[in-house]
Image 1 (cartoon, rainbow, N blue to C red):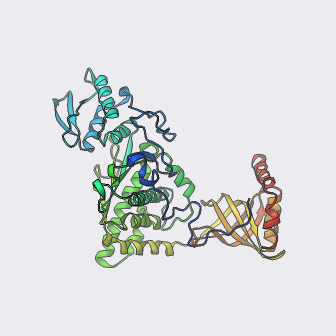
Image 2: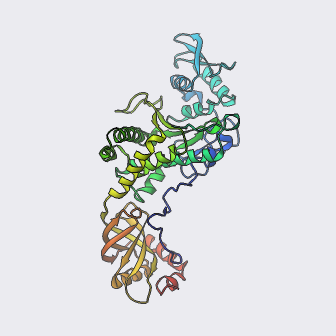
Image 3: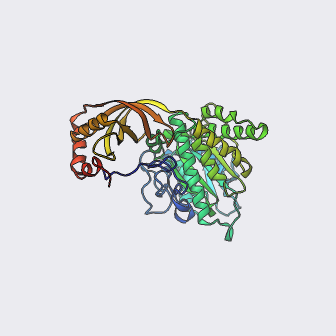
Length: 448
């Protein structure tokens, strides 16, 4: 409970909405020195397991204990070989059926001996030496290889074609734009896992943001690209949804450009395409000569059912922007309001005089996948809401959740009644009231 303030307007980003200036995964530039790693959400950078001591702890969950070089006793040599090949390492010699010698891109003198299976007598020793060499080496791909070995992860990669700066780098503002676009694309994919809708607004955002807590994101050297690591458990559904949504968006864009019809974007909603995803693609492509997104499956888990083993990168160009903008506006205008019966705790109240209707802001406890809603109540319902709040009870109300403004307004409110809750929740609500005793002096009386 706070002093009453206006809710965000229809065109203002809400507390859970990514804005165009939000920092991308890993903050500006994607982490320390353009090569650090961090969770996609929240945007403050945190390091992926890496070779240097003193790095911050990785996020909880799949990454627990994944620091430094992985335990060779738990590494599948076939997975290590697949990751080396993915990152451009070449097998140059070795004994077929026993082990191979791998060298990094560029013909560097460094090489690794990697057994082909755990049946090789010195398998664990060779793996330990190879992993230690990667942890201590300077190959740009070493950290990504170690990350893929430590936790089976699907990888999402972004590239933007922009004019290079000094020494082949890109300005930090361009890095920031890439990070912001990647963050928004991940969030759009997570929202599509929760529900298929042309416009999500404020719905499901808490659940979607929570699902991204285990995602790690790192910047490529020079700032030209980003890579997100989605642990197979629990991130595989997000990777699959992004795979289908990106290809559906590409096909719908091609159809729009070839025929002039936008109906393909309506069908693409079932694959996960939405206002949020098209806006993320617009942010990714804007100001570039083109952008690409690629997915690569975790070698330890293999490709998911219904997906290509080696998906082709999905490319978008500036010529696609008009179609994407049209689709974004189409989704925004076409999503209908939703009938709901929700339960919420009163956190703000305001009306222009001592009597008459007033506006109430509710923290949603159930009935709708949004954090807060604003609802206009008649005098009797407004009084009921105030009394319920004073005794530490939430209220139940029916109405329609309006898409305009991001599903934050409830219209046609009816059936406002207090709801009994358990003692723990009631004590918490009463404590919040006592900590904000000035609330009703401002919120229930006339506005200044």
